[in-house]
Image (cartoon, rainbow, N blue to C red):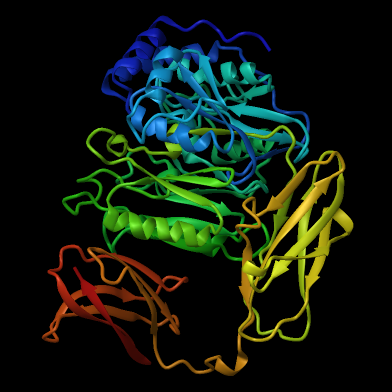
Length: 591
């Protein structure tokens, strides 16, 4: 692969500005006049491999194994230092910078948690760049034939920042990884990594920004593309199945229209979705988008997506976008067994981190403050995910499994099946299960079947039993992988339900959980026994007066409401959930 092209003059200007101040996530006003020249230079820029792959490819999911995490060192050193501190324990950290000595000095000083113990697993790459937002202009990891050769895929960046746009080639050169580029007509495609998420199995999500920027109103595209043409390019270059590129309406107040500011795939079956108080900010449009997904698509296994709700925290004054910064916990990043999460204020962070830890058992979930006075990166409409980019491993061992659900079965065994592939072939696979993780796991050999499907069974268990399990596979070349990647510390689980306690004719909604309680503001309420009818949820003060209506209408599919009662005065309240079939009550203490 040839060396990266020399930077254009106006790119050098932006580079100098980025080093001193840091370019914003959005388009800076002084960049507007640079767009025509930038667009013209892209059409003349022959780099990478310009033609589409001549073989099937698969785009990696974020929760898969990674070999490197890339950051560009500018603007927010205390946040970047914390990312390096935790990420280098999981993989190589590539720090793209102007002066490694300057970065080393920051890593060794007492700021942001103190000096790093050592600088092992850190690689300094001196290369030009314009901004910190490497998620958007960094290259995506793709694999030939699902699990064979590692390659990178680079789009045209939707900012007039030429050094950012070509940095992926410098990174690919340094790692000796082939890189494809959608820079030349008729394959030119404008896209950003913050507006893309993929399940590693042919399904991807974006906002309609990808259509807008490649359509007739685009500022950075060379040729206009229809929605069908965009889908075709994503299929040819990234292995996204036709009909499985799910695009949603842009949100009114999320100025950059990147979906990583409000949602994320946690695995092939689970969507993490940010939630605003009812009717607030982007909440209504976000709910419409989610309902469009739930009504129009299933996951790769043919089932409805599971939805995990997580609060979108307000500002210190209680406001939400557009009057305040777009705070989010969805802008987190997987780095093998660690998840780095942006945090803001303790009273909301406690709930956000708890939801993530419950949803990702076994992962080390680490919060990094993105809202303090010295490192207020969230004011730029971005956080941890936006400033990091992972590169997948050279030798992936793919395990894809449809999780077992709760069951009433107490006689027949529970069959576990998984799609398992490696380029050298699979030598063996085992299922590990237990009813008590403290007692260890029992290993059961898995049997190979047709089309790379391996199966084993867990013996039937008594009602009220909880079963924990994971899968381990060994490739012919000795490569070992487990799924979940954190096993045995993390696992999948399901319950054997007691049919004698099943409710055949529910009499109304049941409040099953309120957290945190006592609370300073954030309130997560989980309801059971609700049907499709309208449910009224309200708080009543000690005198019996209705203090706040929290919800009115059908419940979300997961029965969870994420609310903000920080404006209510301290005291004891009665939380009441009512439908035409009945009601239930729980005490809530507001501190």
